Length: 341
Image (cartoon, rainbow, N blue to C red):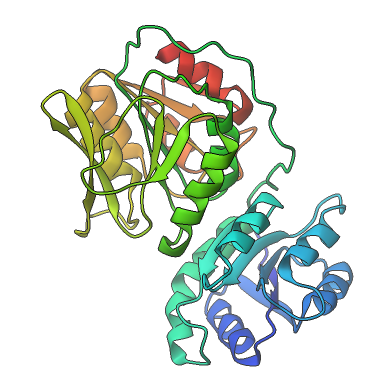
């Protein structure tokens, strides 16, 4: 955006409002236009000020964060919403908020009025700037397509990476895959560590496939979707003919942990050409190095089309590197995947 991003800060904690406001004003690209102390004040100020982005707490008096999202949902071009919240007892609320159209989530490092809150400043700035250019997530529930399960698979493994907008995209995609999928699925989603277990549980309820959070040494079996734990790399290893998950706590050159690149590169080593990688919506370029490894090993790389991406960053980076075999909107991705399996 050529002008500064106009942001409304919403939180019932005076200290949290102060920290978020001061953190955002470190960036010359951001203008904090006002603050709101609860959901009702937030709705009023959104209507009056028309901010580009709203940073939104979830648990507030009078009207909570979900109420704010519902209230602004009827607007033709609502502001992009970034959740800034604790995980304590709010993991499910955060996933509800993402389903209602929130673009991304920044985890508060503490619930206390402490300077530790400033630790989220760099991430908060990056997420708000990305959100300003994001497409509003679709809130329509994707119909589960009637797709016959694959027969003898040409691939042994399906790996998927996603970031901003990923919870919505993954829900639509995994819910559309058949329960008799003949290959295992491993997923990296850039989501704070405190939320991945709740997300896996939600996805398991929505899908015909079994969905679990990754555990070290877990076998990757057909019909099972394994979600990387937040803050830990998910690595695919071979144990004889069996593919297994390994949880790797070591740092990497990637700014993300878990990293799509780490998952994709390890999958390429373990499965060789019998591999399909899928890059969904997200900011940045995580997945390019891994996509290169998949293609070098003879596997296929698919990307989400710009038309359905909340942020067309990761798929664009893969496409511009010449590594994408095909692209499809999210509601057509299941059919494209099955054609490659």
